[in-house]
Length: 132
Image (cartoon, rainbow, N blue to C red; front, side, top):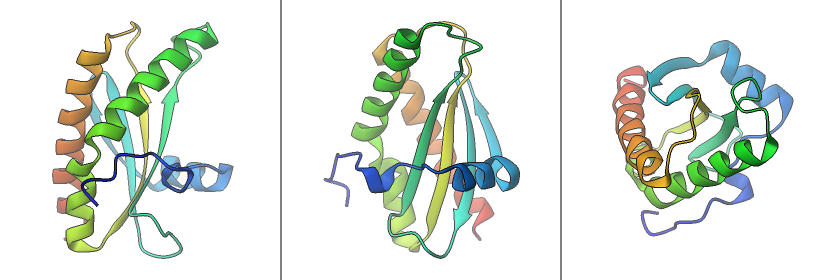
């Protein structure tokens, strides 16, 4: 799947129950400016990875700022997601996860992209440890 650079609706984590499940049972990784909560899944999920992106209202009062950050994060993830997806496909495992932006400042796209790449690499390592 390495060539597919879309971020389709099926890849998005949505629904109160699904998101609550990750918050309650998921494992956490902190990599500034992100906090990642992830939960290995077995059944009932077509996509290898489903992701929700969260930018808190507490840190960014204006919706335009939150939306700007979410757009930057989505784009960085979309273009680099193969880092994580390739390892999921090799092991035929599935994962739901939430990417939470915890910084109090709006970072430029290039910085967000670099951090997303590092976060995806770390997530791949952590996920392989948990899924052994």
